[in-house]
Structures are given as structure tokens and as C-alpha cells.
Length: 158
Image (cartoon, rainbow, N blue to C red; front, side, top):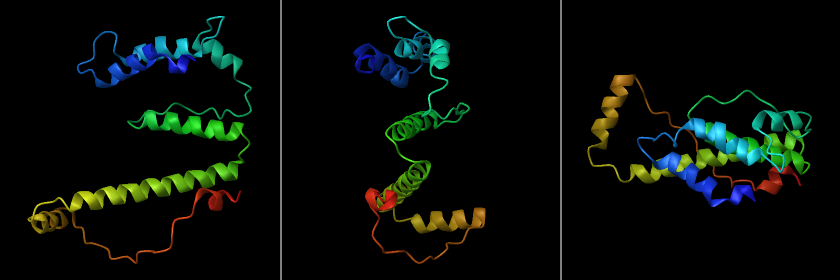
């Protein structure tokens, strides 16, 4: 029920949109206040206590923290993998699902680039020629596969 708390979500939202951040809209608030509160139960355990209690969880794959700009995605992705392990997916099925998701992300990125390229001005050829000269790039013509995308049940062989 805490995950649905409007106070939690409004705090997270304001941390994201408020610029410049105030004293209460910093990353420290997330780690020192919100996450321990989210992990607490009737005993008001803090994050170190929650970690100690869950250290033997068979579905947890403890990893070092992500330190890049994509850490929010990585947190969500770790949560998805945890849920998959907890409902009985094998390591192979999780890897297959990850592959399909990465492939879909790539398809979506290509679709987005193609849709945006149609909006470019007429001097696009000049820009591309300059980029080719500047970075020594030549376009590679590749054969485009036309086979349909597999669905999730085909990939996981369920």
C-alpha cells in the first residue's frame, strides 16, 4: 500500500521536475528517507535492516549499484527480473526475454529516428556530407530482414 501513497509519488515527481532542486528535493532524500520508509514495516526497519532480512532471498541477484545516467531504467529492469525469478522463470527464459526486449528497444529507436528524419529540412544532404567528411563516415548498405518479429511465447517457448 505504501507504493500507492500519493506523498511518495509527489515527492518523487517534484525531485524530477523541480529545477533547481531545493533542500528537500535532492537524491539524499530518496536514499535516506523515501527508500527506508518504503522498506519499513510495522517495526519501522531501516534499509540496512531490510537488506539483512532479505540477504538469503533465492530470487535476489545482488549486484553492485549502477552509477550511470540510466540507473532509473536499470532499477526497473532489476525489478522485472526479480519478479520473473519469483514466478518461476529460468535463467535462460529471462535471458531470452531480455534479448527480445533489447531488440524491441532497438526497433523503437529506429522507428523514432526514421520518423524524425522525415522532419529534417532540405539541406540534410549538406549536413550529412559535412558529418561524413568530419568523422570519416561512409554509409553501409545492409540487407534489411523482412521476417516478422517473434512474439514473447515463441521466444520463451512456453
